[in-house]
Length: 453
Image (cartoon, rainbow, N blue to C red; front, side, top):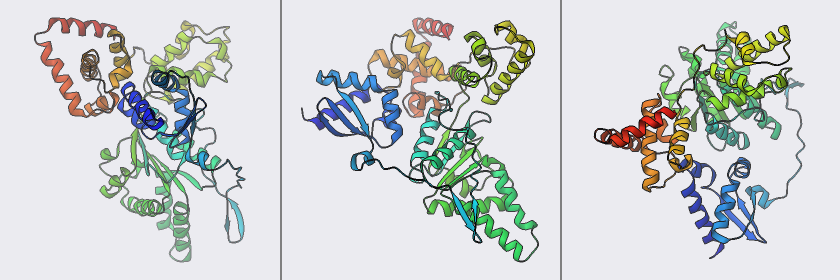
């Protein structure tokens, strides 16, 4: 078999083994560069692909190629730049601007402590993280604007600062982070200036600040509601930057379609690139966040998994609640000085910070895991394009349970099952509903699965 034909067969096998969305994001654009001396070199679109393929999918890649060839190959992932040119050292200068022959520092407003290295990734924010990495590595070329939305306190601002910090560290591009409230206040300042030269200077300085940038990051765009003139000015700023292929990154507590009081022409432009949502962190992600927040504290070695899970269960809404709870525990520990932090001690310390009735809510990933374990298949099987009965039936059941056991909409359920259309989800749910009318075996099976949930 010729190498290119082998590689096509390899990709086909991969497509049958992962969900449609996973294949589309990580495998669809791979290209074979060479295959010699038991080393396969593959071109990837972006550096983030190298990281994810090596970290998450290398076992699947090894096994798939071995099944086709019987040879244990080593895989080398490269970007197009790495193929064509040797790496070059780039000497970067501090970003400075000249104003009236005076050199002044440019203030990005970024918080350097908010970066990709300390951003904890889970199922609820993985797509947003990958999209943010793509934008950070190639600003102004894809996903412009990047529109990140979700409820308050779940990491949108951290992700935006991480993008800005990555760009400033790896390029000489000019980055500006601001909030919509700050933008609105500065624009309103024009009208507060006395008429004359000062007004003109203020207006010009305002436009230069927001239009003479390579990357504009604007947080909480929903606060432009009710400010029609500010919306108009932001529209002109958006248009100017977008036409110059400058990267725009926006966050909101709701999707573009739900920003009903924002001008239609602005809302339509928010969807030009990629709107991506972040969901509240699931239980496992909350545990990882708590462990990270405890990493450099005095109680790191005094606390066990039970206490971490207690905090995670009691703070289901957002990261800010988790941080507040940890701060309360740190303060109480500093006062009481226990040798170890037991569950009873933690309960006494933070009972006012956590929810009294704690339980693990059913989520789509949780239901997928329980159903997959029940039928002795994998979650990836449920998300895949496989149509054998031993996969299709569990998939229908999982979709049905996701609909009745969670508050998620049909589009979200379809997305989590390999990017399927909502009509496919409806058909699966209706099939199970119809069978339940006369199938006692199925009814008992669902009761058993629900008990495990």
